[in-house]
Image (cartoon, rainbow, N blue to C red; front, side, top):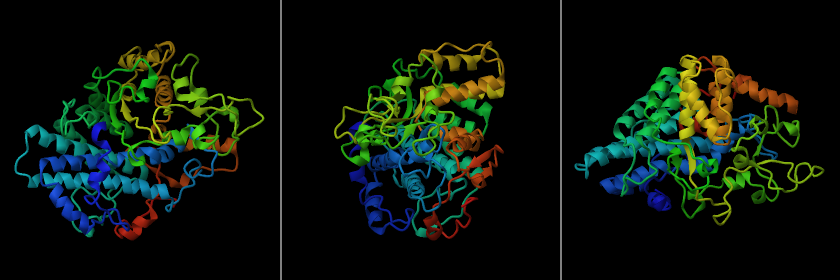
Length: 501
């Protein structure tokens, strides 16, 4: 997929034109090109490429801030503290950008799915299934982000032909999840376990295993433990942990056995490359990175929520993931000049010193790794019922042994609660700064508890508990971001804002 990803933006110019006032309003000029493009199988394949394209901007910046800093793992010394201290309102730019990017992917998927019916013949039944399955997988993926960020959202599952087609009221959280599950279950039946190459079959596209893994993630979010066990079963043994942890992130094993689904980068422009080095690497920020790891040695100083259950202290001695994830680079401590060189840690995971210019990395970004599947299954098995020395222990220990750590057994994890805490710790360390932690804290119902602890150390800050809802499916306290203010002008049928805004 890397071989042609750089051309996606050019191919879509004039095809998926979008109004400045409302991302869901179709632009007449684009409709002519759309009719021409999506009238052939090859055109539909190009359309599918466009469905993936919003992943690139989403994981360049949006997720780092809304699902990275809004956890107990990352913080910023800069003035952009909105997501770090949960001081976001409905006019915050990233809230609108996130909404736009996700609905852009959804509306593209809807269009390709509807235009499929206008084509009389496909080169094969397989190709028809591939196109449909990828669109349904991606539509589910985008809605899963939206429902976790905003709660109930307008559920648009048909092509937008006139503006009123997009002006739908908010569906309930339950309704959005029902559609997500429907799409993923259908995608599982339509997608292959791997791709053979050639047009429309390039490596890096969503597979059956990606759909199963995403469905299992949905199951964990909704505490459907038995379903999560079922949906991870066929993935076990189909991948493997990479011996060198760094190879998950350094471009050397892209779309390989350690990965289930990735954002495909590799272009030549800023739009088709990542700029995570600019977010995390100190030299790119002329002394400081925009996001730093929480470290209890900072005692709440340096800017925002810098400490309290710090990620730095979560690593055990001998964990070979530490030096891959975190580094001091031996440079001056720009926050505390009186401290020695190398006394401040940075996020090292995405440092790319190969590509030029430095701010444009061609390395893919892992969204679902095989390690994630192992930990999801272990968590679900434990929630179904703790079994001393059972399968869940083996899955957890596979991760730990690969990290150079000793295995757990029934003498170290003697109860379901002890195993639960061990899984939560292992998820945090294994997938640090992969935009998982915020979603985990929120689904476990402990986001407020963890963030308030950091706020107490910082002082004079209070978590906005009025922005929590009782999740209608799990009953856990659940934080929601606001519906973007501009969407109330774009769509009068949205009507209700989330609580606390």
